[in-house]
Length: 205
Image (cartoon, rainbow, N blue to C red; front, top):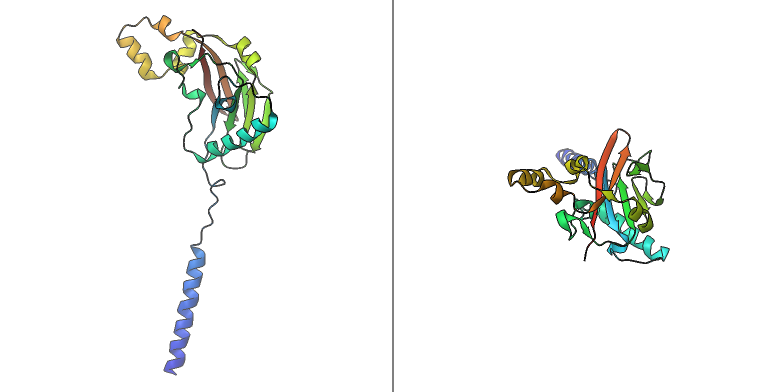
């Protein structure tokens, strides 16, 4: 009787352990579980500000690689980061197409964000990686015509508060200093959210 009771107890413990293990099994999908926030990125074609590449296969392959980086990295250096070699982080003598990626939440998106360039709605959607990541192209011929001077309203969003305070405290010729180069103003609207980003470029010898 004792042997039977002991066997029953062992079986019960084994079953309980298996059930507990099942309850704690977690299947992780790195792409689906990423908590992507509403954001936008901008790159030169093939990451080369002088690229003249026209092969769509080469460009699409690059877009796929870039999409994976956007979805798997916490942050990604891009043109909107104002990391160029010109004044105030502007891009120095750029001469190629721009590629803009819009990213929404990791939940299945029901709408694609709307992209406005200098207040004009852009319809140059070229590649949808998934329901949450969409690419637009801004052709060189287009942005060279649309790029404009920087005004006082732009400055508050184009430059960091730290830079604006530094200029104010040191009595620099702020208008001359901050208006170097020209910009394209990007506004990305997604439901009730809106992002404002800038392509800031300076040309010179």
